[in-house]
Image (cartoon, rainbow, N blue to C red; front, side):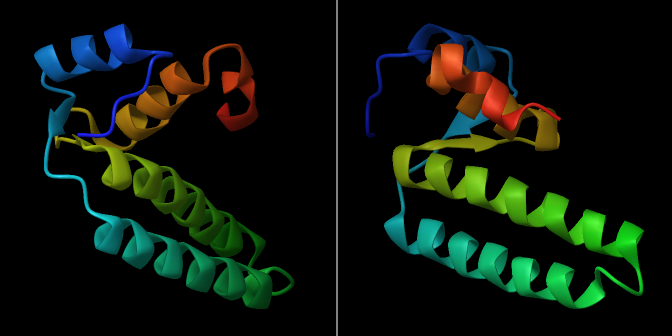
Length: 104
């Protein structure tokens, strides 16, 4: 497992609470998530003019998959209990005082 200092205690608490689980880190999975996120960005751009709300949904998926890619390379993975919020929170804890860059 790739260790990080900032937010380690909070991510450990998320693990204890069942919001994330620790899995084998996977650069291949991280790369797959980033490829999907990039594809979502292209799709959102294509949808933007005719379907802005649809483009927003696809952008959300791109952002979520980009953050999940970071976690995939480290070890934590959101559980069904933690869901999408757990991905954002785990990365936010790791960013510390810079976490506002990923707030909705």
